[in-house]
Amino acid sequence: MSFCNNCKSDKIPGVIRGNVLSGLCEKACIQVDKVFDACISRQQTDNVELTLSNVTPSGLTEPYTFVSARSQGAGASVTDLVITDLPDMPGRSRVQCNIVIPVQVNFVDATGRQGVATSTVTVVKDVVMCTPQPSLIPYSVQAVGNVVSTVGTYDDVNDVFIVTACITVILKVIMPVQLLVPTYGYCYIPPCQEYNNQECVGVFELPLYPQ
Image 1 (cartoon, rainbow, N blue to C red):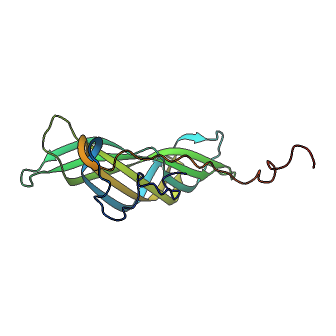
Image 2: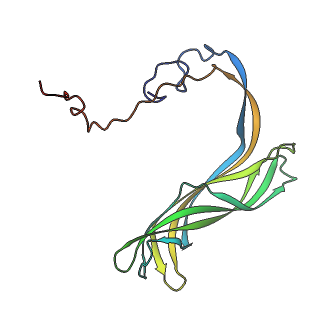
């Protein structure tokens, strides 16, 4: 079992049915990242240069043919951050930064061999966001980035791909805080449901010796 496997306990996350106050039993202090502000931007960007690194396998033959590029699991990083308070807009600041998104590039070499490399896409942002008042605990600006590209050409002079990329970026103003929240108590953890691909069904049931 798991949270998603039809467990009927009222001590697991899920949709609230009935009176929302039924079962509340405590006020709990939890330590979380509070998001003070967030914004999302989506854009199609042409002529994005992807400089290749960590090319595998070795011994590939140029020129390369672009196949695709997608952002990797590693989160985007925020660099060159500058935050400027806006006197005419209390509680808001101008946030300037570069968001560096790691991507994996798939391509084919001149002999038809498939290759993989890593690269990065840098997005320049200049936005207005709400920022908390000064406090002992500082806030930070974090980013989530997604890049997808299926159109591109290879520049063999500079050893880069020139692509058209669909880029999504989420910027967040975050601070680690301790919040007091109402709770229903501790969560019930159901036992795991082991995966069974059914390949051994009928084999394990065989008798040790024939009847």
